[in-house]
Image (cartoon, rainbow, N blue to C red; front, side, top):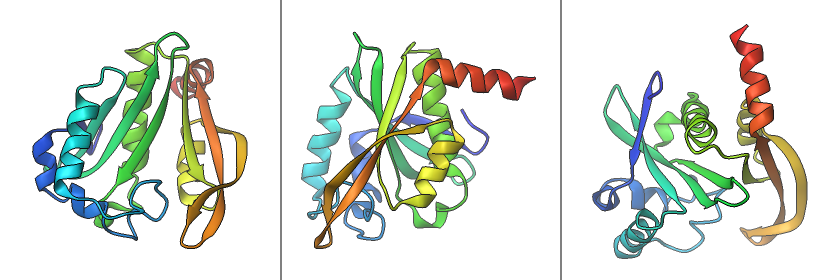
Length: 181
């Protein structure tokens, strides 16, 4: 549990709330790989059921404590147990929550869980190369750019580069020791 947020497992009834609307909002999905085609409630419900029943994924709703409101989601997975690594993805769908540090807080909670509870060695993510605000958030948590995928994404009639970013457990521990002193 964070200062302003808590995370809980995503539920199929979350689809009845604002979740499916977020995926149909081009401003919300501008930097996501999803949201290219319209989302339906039935399709989203099937996705939530599939991911919720797949042990290699952890899909969580981001809840703002003050309003007890579902403001976004964070996904860890697929979790590769042999390599002890996973991808992470985040969506803050409630636009009134943008720029308020909620993504950073939610990601910090997931990173702590991944390293301290799941004993993962590495967390990776993909990000549009021109999404400067997200890159700043990831850097602030210790993620580093490990590579550029040129013309990797196609959005709004043009190809865009993407960065692969990663965070090692050892770097995370070292950074935590530095902030605890």
